[in-house]
Length: 335
Image 1 (tube, rainbow, N blue to C red):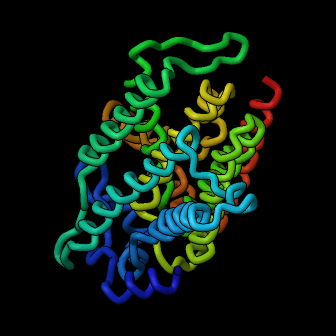
Image 2 (cartoon, helix red, strand yellow):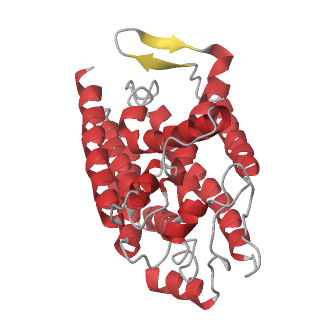
């Protein structure tokens, strides 16, 4: 379906009409714009549609076939289940649709003004609200009230589990700014969901493992067309849906599955964590010290500013992502 989606995006010119990015302090991000000014116009946003649309069609198609022809083979591959995959599937679609709205607004700017879509505060508010609602569901419907700690057992949080869930969701979403170089976000998210495929499988959460594997395949389909030069960008409709879904998957592979999905999350998702921390360090340093730590944040753009070719930054992030993902999976096996 990629030719259809790509054709639609190019036909309707779904890209920013003026290149450039506004920094968190409201000023023009001069270093970033110098590196990417020519890349932002002419290449469509909304490429993340490939991921969630293919996931939606795969899940829906298998489910429909299982109802029409419920053979043993079809029922085995129907992984849509209420206890494991309904919630991450719902989260993927809702998050992706909200991100799609933001992407659409980004493309409605003019050649005179840099369009910003939904402001950062509004996006964080939406993500926090979705996280709180899902945390509410975990707490009241699934009776989840804590997380697993190695050597401790379940660390009870009580009602604080709900805001904790929302904070974890916001923290993962903040790492979505890793979508800034062709192929970077797609490769990192494919690695992360591959790791949780293995974790869910070891916990005998077969439907969730199938869901994560399917999502990995959908990301790889997107990545095939996102390697340099990118045919389209993932943008918010991809990163918002994937980061929200990752939070849900991590919690399902925790106390619900008898695993340690939350404790290993910062390890498996280390590239996202590093991306977020680099932004926090940069903003804090500029505010209190009046100077930067990095030439530009997030950190992958810092390496670009140092003169690294984009493909070197991407591939080294992939290598680091694989290493930390393997460490996370191994830890879940030995704990």
